[in-house]
Image (tube, rainbow, N blue to C red; front, side, top):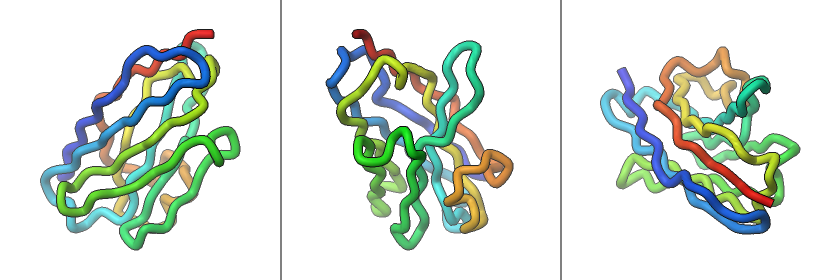
Length: 124
């Protein structure tokens, strides 16, 4: 079992920045990928970014160039630095863990462990 706790959400104006954190605990040695996802009311889930144990990263086209994903292995924490935020980035953000490297592709079915989410609101 892997437990995930997100933090760092909040309200910000467009073009602002926020940094989310995802702290993992439990059997973290088995996980290969941490992914970030988001869901806005009435909209489908969307993949945001992912990072593999080897540091490989992938991004959705909507976040590439604006968001940065990184990891501090000593703290079992993955960060999502979100820059140049837009109102359409408003959503609940979740981190998730997968035991397969293929999860870098940000497909939800690869992920078996999920956090509770943190709300991000971007106003125009």
